[in-house]
Length: 352
Ligand code: AMP
Image 1 (cartoon, helix red, strand yellow):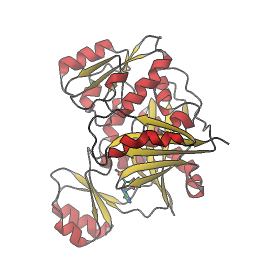
Image 2 (cartoon, helix red, strand yellow):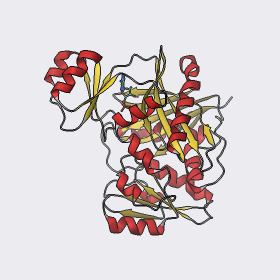
Image 3 (tube, protein in one colour):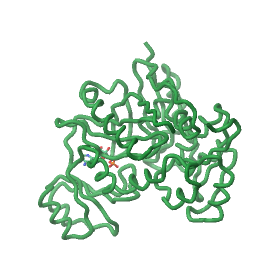
């Protein structure tokens, strides 16, 4: 168990790190962030912030020496940087990054554990794409295997003509059959160093243009019927990886049952509602897990909870949302306002 006053290192400088650092403070820990130059909004919430390249060996060694334990808030941290931290003092295990950073590996990993995925095929050439389209058909989605997020690095192929017109990206990709789903949801769980697991209620996640726009509790009957199976898979993934911390698996609720979409080896946007909506937030439980503390109660504390992301310039008027009901604003403090960029979120609770 980490002593009070210990230092937790966080790779990545985004809003997830900012909310993690905010959760670490009341537990008596200080955080040091580490990320390359950028709009590192976690920095003001960290005691110190190291701005250095991911492959800066001197900076990494210095960071490791100053942290009692290290975690990450950003899933594209190079595996080599995570492995540069002393074994047993980085959580989750770097193998989780390795699995989740490649859509092909994560699908195979999950299938091996009995999970259901969309039909898929790795694509490295035009011939691969033609062969895959012949079996998977259209509509389909071509996705880069690595580095995609919020719908970036994805091309929707509605017909063979779309595929013929597409300039294949200069990176390994995967073709996925388009899944017909009733709704989307995620399983957010936390696993402690002793293997204990707790899971939050699954919300219904609504995406627009590939970006999460809202998560809602209760998730509704279609999702409720599939949560058990999805949780079982998420728990198997966490056990197989010897995972420590918060892990998220995203699913489509379909007529055949839950179809695994992707996993995030970290706290997740679809768990932001837990800050006010659950007895212990995903951020606090992540810190508790990496610090070796007992995990907190994950139960939902309101009858209804809704989280909405605030994108782009909408952040400038977001304070007006606070005038109604039991509403809470989280402004990430980002300087550059860009269309579609996640700038903050609001959570609205109905207690009853
Ligand atoms: P991803 O980045 O893979 O999570 O994709 C972002 C969003 O695009 C998902 O949350 C879905 O709304 C949609 N999407 C991704 N893959 C598929 C698929 N194979 N079939 C249908 N919709 C998908």
